[in-house]
Structure formats: structure tokens, C-alpha cells
Image 1 (spheres, rainbow, N blue to C red):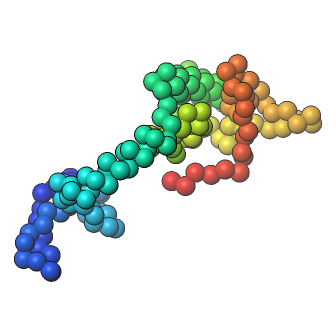
Image 2 (cartoon, rainbow, N blue to C red; image 1 turned 60 degrees about the vertical axis):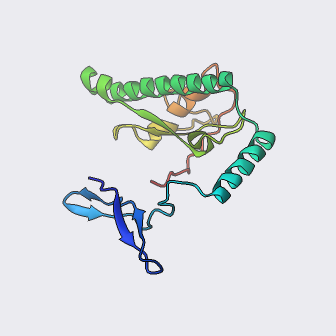
Image 3 (cartoon, rainbow, N blue to C red; image 1 turned 90 degrees about the horizontal axis):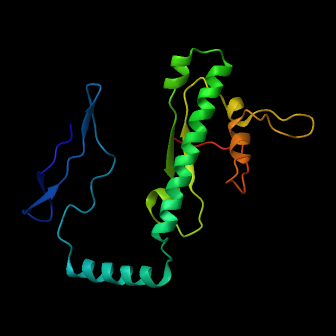
Amino acid sequence: MVSQNTTSKTKSSSKATPTIDMSCQIGGRTVRPAFQVVDANPTPSPSDERFNQLLSSYSTQNISIESTVGLRKRERVLDRLKHVCQTWIKDTCRKQGLGEDICQSAGGQIYTSGSYRLGVHEPGADIDTILVAPSMCTRLDFFGTLDEEGKRDPSSLSEMVRQHPDVTNLVPVEGAAVPI
């Protein structure tokens, strides 16, 4: 439960300033953010308005914005990647001898991060993605093993993505970790 519209008095003034209580109940405990909301005033000052106008003007003149066609292409790429990942998850479950009902409901989800997620990417920039897969899909399944010739297991996700006809450059980074 998130409580809002509370007021508190500042030490420098007896005037009540609105603050937002972002605490919530989790497992019977009240959890509060480490820092308070900085800007509790919903009305920007004239200085804020001028700065926003200056920043918008600078952004328009100096930062390239991706076209609608480019954005749609990115959405299609992410949709195809999601399909490839979900197919890999089902195949990995089948390889482990799990029932078809488990294979079909195993799931898997793609999330974006980085500049694309924040909406500040430039045209042609990469799309940082995170795959959340069920626990039966291991890191070894993801990257596969290398044979004597240095080729990866063709049933690994990294190899399936690398061999996809629309992929032009893929570098598997086995030591990468995402802090969560």
C-alpha cells in the first residue's frame, strides 16, 4: 500500500510542504525509500521552465532521434529475439526429458535496459537485453560448450542467435553478470 498526499512542516518555515510517502507494506514490514522525493512541488518555477526550454532546444539541435520506422524495426527485432529465446527454452526443457506441458508453459521473458529502456538511444545503437529464463535453463545451456575446433554447441542459445539470418554481429560474453 502506497500512501500519498501527506504533509510535513519544514524547520525553516511553518508552511506545510507536500511530501509523498512512498513507503509500502511487504511481508508485514513497512519498507521506505532511502531518500525522500526531491521535488514535491508539482508546479515548475519560471527558472525550471526556462531551463526545460533550453534543454529541449539543445536536445532537438544536437541529439539525433530515431525515426518511427527505426523504432518499429527495434520492436520487431525484440519480438523475434523473444520468439527465438522461448523456442530455445522449450527445446532445452525437451532435451532434459520434461513433459510437453512443462515445456510449453516454461515461459521466458525479455527485458530491455540501458539507453533503449530509458528512451535516450541514438539511431543504430545497440539494445541491451536481459533474458529471464526458468531455472532448468543453465548458463551452460545458454552458452553451450566449445568443441575442438572452437565451435559452439548448435543447441545453445548463443549459437541459435548467432546463426539467425538477421544477426550480423554477436559476441557471447560468458563472464558477464547483471547486478539485480
